[in-house]
Length: 68
Image (tube, rainbow, N blue to C red):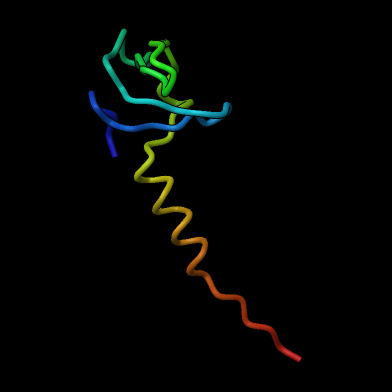
């Protein structure tokens, strides 16, 4: 999913996340954190929350077969 204003994101290398509020340039996204602060973050350091949920769901749906 492409980042857009209003998209809910999580930080890839840090705890927390927020909502995309704008863009400084092609690589820098302005994220309003859950604490209400706006901070510039590299777009490559963000995960769209919807995509994160899909990945976790897919991981949980993978079944492991045990053979004896």
